[in-house]
Length: 320
Image (cartoon, rainbow, N blue to C red):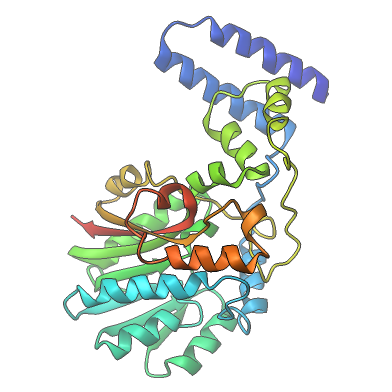
């Protein structure tokens, strides 16, 4: 069956290549590629979305979530959002997907009126220890029905949307926009899809497959031959990363402003963090290179290099 699907896939692609209309060409390619993936299976880094698995993952990691591990990426994220808060007038904040409450701890100390919600009971229990005076709700961000329209001046959604599949995004972004006042700000953190081009590993191959005109299995093999480690990393340590453990997805910072605009937001700026001075296969585990990467944080947050050398980014958007 797989051989038959592969042959049919290649035959259709040969026909597509004869098309002169580039718009039609691209649409046909996407349709064919989607059909092929459904028949042949997912890419190496694609996991099926399972909400319960995601909840269990965060319940199990609530006690260690704030540990820095090898690289203190979340520390730099908190520094960046703290700087964002310093530029905003005091107001009401919703931390949608608040985790252990570390951001709320900073926001409350700066005088903001804060509310938090998360679908993980374990995370909420930890958050209530850190900021006991904040009101919390156990709910997913696709159900903010406990809040009235225009309830908040600012909504922060830090590292939550990467765990939501695209088919569920519409309702979530509509809910987030509904509870934000016009002129308010939506601050979100995402995995950076463009970083996969910098990794020179299996994620690079998957990036090409998702976004460029890599058609046949033969072309994929040719591309893989250019990369020394096309089958790594194999992530089995959930303390290091959720990728390959539960469903995750990245955003392309070039395209993300367009997505925001569909839901009533205009992107104001990107802030990049979790820098890699070298691809992860060379940086990770190397103390000297990790120190070099740390020295890039904050100072390069707004520079173009972050689009490729940082694995995560913050979007600051305003509701219109």
